[in-house]
Structure formats: C-alpha cells, structure tokens
Image (cartoon, rainbow, N blue to C red; front, side):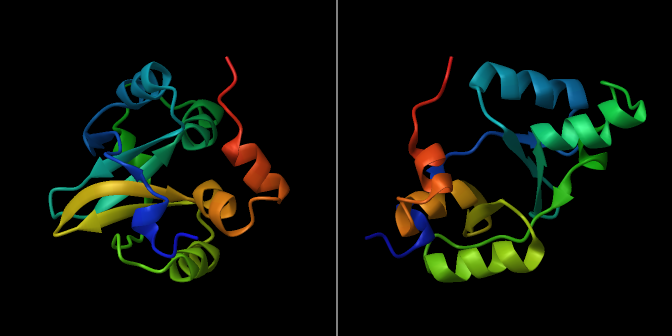
Length: 137
C-alpha cells in the first residue's frame, strides 16, 4: 500500500498565474475535464481555485468572467512528495480542504486530493468507490 503523497498524487497539475481571469480558469477546467487549477504566485506560493469556487464566489455573487481568478482562490497549504499519507489527511482535515498542492524544490509537481487518499487508504468506502470510478461522459 502506498505510504507517501508521491504514490497517489496527480502529477503535473494544470497551473495558471494569479492574474489569469475567471473565464480562463473555467475554460481550462472544461478543456481538461478537471475540477481545479493550481494558481502560481510570484513569491513561489500557490493557491487553488475549484469549479465550486467559480460558482459560489463568482457566479452566485454577480462577479465577472474578467475578474482575476486569484481573487476567488483559496490559499493552499502545501505538502512534499515525501509527506506521509496520514500527514496529508491530517492537514486536509485541519484546514478543511479537499486538495493540497505538492511542491518539491519550490516547484509545483502535483496535487493530492481527498479522493486520492480514499482510494488508497479506504478503497471500499463510498468515497473510495466514487473516486476510483471511470469518468462519466
């Protein structure tokens, strides 16, 4: 059974600069069939914006497709590829997040999600079943 984030993460995540627009993030999510984009900050930090963020923090409050996506993103705690799965799960619970960017030598190398952890740690759970199911069309 995998024991570190490197064993379960999605490598080479899709990224955008904080200055990209909400529309650019949404279009990229649609094109790649993904639910989140990692936003890279000038100082090397990162944030995450999800499809839910776009609905709740932009669409539902009358925001614009031209707004900078960085305004609606969540600042993200990060983990290293060598981080134990239990530590990643603890950090997700502590920060009430479902995804963590994975950083190595100051560079974004992946994203680990709650679903990734469920598939590996508790594959028989409902979340594990849903997360391991093939994408629907």
